[in-house]
Image (cartoon, rainbow, N blue to C red):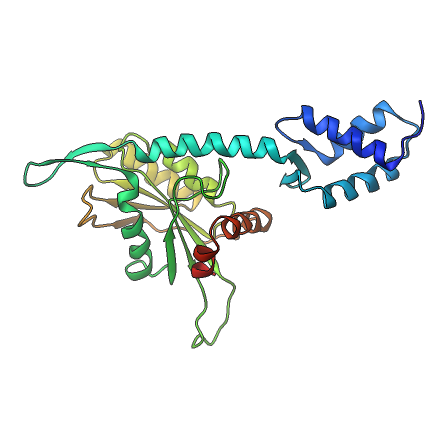
Length: 265
């Protein structure tokens, strides 16, 4: 077995990444290359990989120490977009007090909840409706995201604090809502679940207990676009997000919509 040069190491790495559609950790990639050509010093492989990852835009760092070809990341994002879009545009029928049946979709409540976060909850001083999969990932597109920023008149200055929310209009999706809201805590200081008042008492009680245990905020609302009447059941606990995922989310938001990013930050 011959000792590999830098270009050969990088070619081997690209071949391995091509077959690792779900991504591969740095250590596993180094081990695979060294295992096939043990005469190649690990330090040489390490340097070649470091150069490859720094200079090749077709390779994306998807998590700490984990890399994936961009084409596979994009394919997963497209699938996520389709799934999330189907979920958000699937309307439900409700009956108004005037006995008129209307069809509602989740996005009907994004703007009003964003404004509620600013005006009533006073959790943020800027908020926008996201939804869909604008951030291109299975884990990281809240329905609403807001930011609490220090103002010029504030004596004590602080770093911006991110608040995310997952809204569900289907009263039968509390578990889905909870899972998504917990995932948003990766990059948020606070996270909310927003569910309709038509959620069953049993489901609401379980959600309340789970939210209290995990520091997620819980808000109920009426399925009425003009008067949703948001009501806080559990206040969210403030936590420090994982800065890797917070910065990843911010980069994706900036790339997707610079105007929205500038409104928040």
